[in-house]
Image (cartoon, rainbow, N blue to C red; front, side):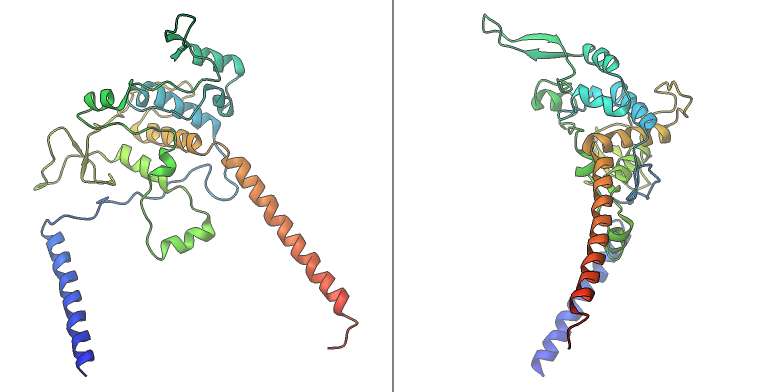
Amino acid sequence: MKTIFRGAITLGLVLATALAAGAAEEEGGTPHYPIKKPTEENWSFEGPFGTYDKGQLQRGFKVYREVCAVCHSLDYVAFRNLEDLGYSEAQVRAIASEYEVEDGPDSFGDMFMRPAKPSDTFPPPFANPEQAAAANNGAVPPDFSLIAKARAVERGFPTFVFDVFTQYAESGVDYIHALLTGYQDPPEGVEVPEGTYYNPYFLSGSSLAMAQPLFDGLVTYDDGAPETVDQYARDVSAFLMWAAEPHLEERKRTGFNVMVFLVLFGALVYLTKRKVWSTTEH
């Protein structure tokens, strides 16, 4: 009887604590981040048969070069990988030649700068993390090579169960798109620390050190695509997804072939079992 009584008291305390926490949040207490969760966007590469849109990837690469590359590195992507985006070998060489990378040592033991080659990776915008932090209000801009897989908002029950069947794996790009398009003025009563910018989609707080990077008309497209913040965000998000998972299409083709093989193999095993045991008395 005492055990039941104590259990009832404990349950009551838990419920009271939860209600109090909910009330505190409603009254302006610290909410869970992100304040707003990103919505599911439509991507050409979603689902088990999705593929990359090379035109979109090229637009996204242009947005990265003209906007993001000022602060964010792409350490694990080589210039030669750009051929996957539809660029020719000559175009890749021309793009690489626009960058300089450190090489050496030479015969005198000194390091020197030279034009980049297709085999080189994209050079970082800063010499070291300390220089990057000094130029960005103390915050080191993250590398963008794997950002589309490293940043994602957790999806609670039962959503993640359905994700198994829908093959949803775009949480990272949905988050990037939401973050890039989610800058807004802070609501009344919300104080934003100096040097930061309010964004309810940010994973780690209500504001971040990066100012809004995209504006309508900022990047000129050659293919007639809309030059809007939403389109820029979609294109660069798709490009970052490719950077994080360049072999996505090959992986999906392999997975489909494996599933077909397993179905056929299972059918053959079943028929063999029927054949072998059909004349055996049970």
